[in-house]
Image 1 (cartoon, protein in one colour):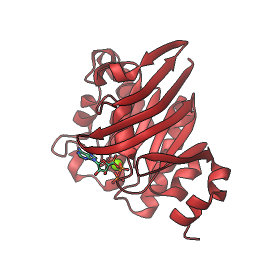
Image 2 (image 1 turned 60 degrees about the vertical axis):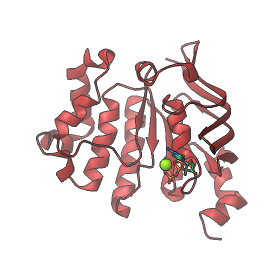
Image 3 (image 1 turned 45 degrees about the vertical axis):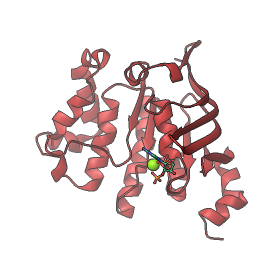
Length: 242
Ligand SMILES: Nc1ncnc2c1ncn2[C@@H]1O[C@H](COP(=O)(O)OP(=O)(O)OP(=O)(O)O)[C@@H](O)[C@H]1O
Ligand SMILES: [Mg+2]
């Protein structure tokens, strides 16, 4: 299945707040692209635009699937999920008083994914054995790292081809950050996912990314391969402290 996402000239905001200015970004099949930026620079807004949760005022978001182009700007979030796009939201957004399994089942609320519920649940448990062991545990009683795994697994319950992950490292101890990022890479490789990951943690993000874009005040100021990023002056001053 051929897949790509093309974002072109995107403007978006919240009332008088302009959050994105002319953002362009492309992701090819089975690539991992990192969206790098510090707090409040527009990473989540861009992801929400892709999911149809924030409507851009200008620009295009086109998902190409097997030679067919879908204009995501005009589709509902439900329709976008049905096309095979899922997001792991910032802050995980789990239901703490529901069990692990109940949280997973809520990830499959779309009719298309309900049909394959059993298979997708098995798939999640195979990818995350710890969730199977703890399937009756309340989500809120799990460790931060386990909760992030659950949030990722829940997104996989709709059997996505394109996975958006919004700041998976936030709030995790350094060792868990590393585990989580490694897990995303494994999932991507094993299941042929295409990944767009927003991160502030430059070093962790570039461990698994093919390419990255830096967003500052709602504008993409640099896009390149990982080795180009490492040599970039902006990156050096923002992230590498040199
Ligand atoms: N619901 C909202 N209403 C008004 N302004 C918002 C809203 N959400 C975000 N913003 C503003 O839009 C800008 C971009 O925010 P966004 O959440 O996209 O940044 P971010 O890069 O994801 O930051 P963080 O790393 O803190 O998650 C910020 O100025 C933010 O204050
Ligand atoms: Mg954010």
